[in-house]
Length: 123
Image (cartoon, rainbow, N blue to C red; front, side, top):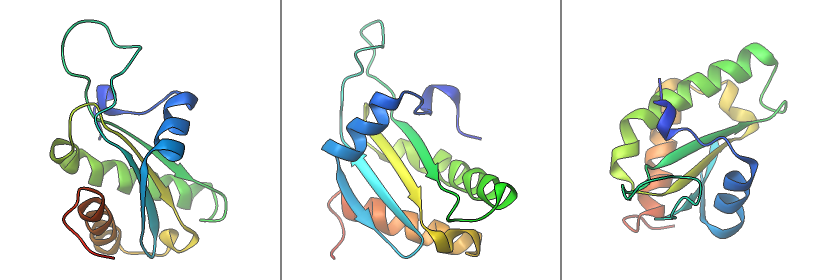
């Protein structure tokens, strides 16, 4: 499970990541990354944590399928959140094929998208 401090919850934060961040698409998902954003809602001098949010529409499937995809994506992001710069905002949008994709395929797509956004991959 993704820790509470690493979850993206506010609509404004989702909008910031999608509108002002970089985007990388793969077969089953699209990842939006806004690197190193300072959180205006955070208190204290600590670096803001990396936060991730997920968008899984009805095009992916019914409620059971959508929740399964969200659980898988949260689990995958838990291990990858430390690789991202502090204060980053990440939005992972599942595409219609994500409901039928295996866990390993989602992991591969997520890794490829994050690698590209962090500057290590090619188109």
